[in-house]
Image (cartoon, rainbow, N blue to C red; front, side, top):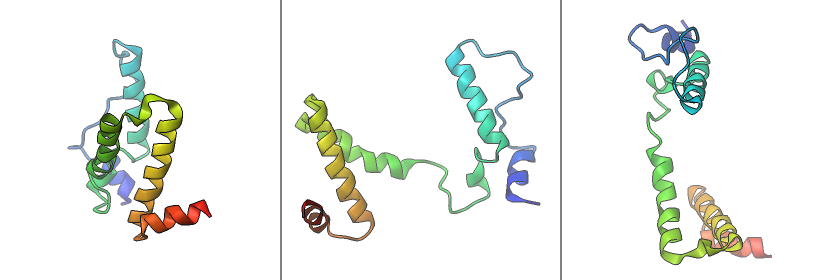
Length: 113
């Protein structure tokens, strides 16, 4: 039995309903339901249940964005598009360097050369 079939056909697993039901009240909700159904049928929606390497939440991504949101509020750097774009490029480069175990300052200096 493959990983996908265990997720798709388990009787105790939530399913976003079938396509033969009447549409939801708003087009946005119906689009969301159909998107969930598509991901469910492809075995992607509940993959974390059978693959222990996949976290069940996106907390790590949320935590990594938190400092960006706080900095934007405090510094008001996104008063214009250029300031926001520049800040995001620098922040992205610094965070990528940290994740790779590199010194962010050295990486920024090398980009300047």
